[in-house]
Amino acid sequence: MLGRLFETWMTRIPSQCAVCRAWPAQRVCEECVQRFARPVPRCRRCAIHVRSGQPVCGPCLLHPPALSSCHAALDYAFPWSACIADFKFHEDPSWAGMLAQLMMQAPGVSEAMQQADWVIPIPLSKPRLRERGYNQALLLARQLLGAADPGRDRLQAHLLWRVQDTASQVSLTRAQRLSNLRHSFALDPAQAPLLKNRRLLLIDDVMTTGATLHSAARVLLQAGAAREVHACVLARTPASW
Ligand SMILES: [Zn+2]
Ligand SMILES: [Zn+2]
Image (cartoon, rainbow, N blue to C red; front, side):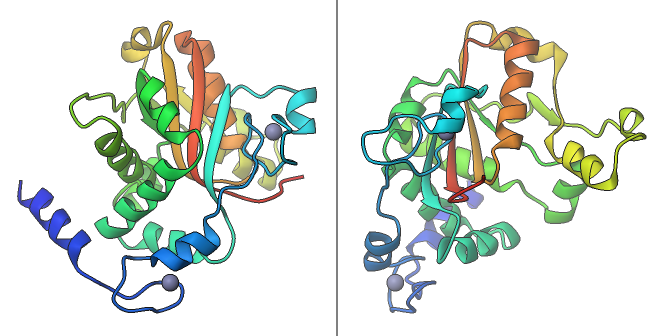
């Protein structure tokens, strides 16, 4: 209760725009949002920029990814990369609320939220969670659910685990090992039946190559026999090939 009151209070404090320094403003002022968060045509499978009218990018057409759809609100570039770094390293409820609001305004996100049976934030590994103290994807998921459908509890924050499979890593190079560690997931076997025939929605803050999200989607589809896995991310690296 007190936490919620503090959160409301924090989001109402006027502050300086983190981009243009206008005062008073929300975390990012309306003008900067208009200027830097304009929707662009994106591939519906991986959220990379495409030409207007092109539904899917070339690589997704050739090799359809595990995700049925992926929506991104922003490019992971100026000024959002700096805002996201601030959000990641300082637990500040006003960032989570503002950034989730930008996600909800992006084409396709509100529909994806409405249609999902379960909303699953991408987990952090245990050492990373200990180091940071919170999972930024979980903060975004909570805000999105609060905006989409406050009465329905569809959050599944402990179903997917980030794992470190050290036994199979011995023969790999250091770079391959690090990459594998980042992208390994497992499913809580006790909760796998929850997924059967369900439409799942993964939430993450930043999508770079897409390897993390696609790997999580594959685990969910294989182990739990989920019907479809979709994703909504705050920011997408503009080009990954
Ligand atoms: Zn501004
Ligand atoms: Zn694509």
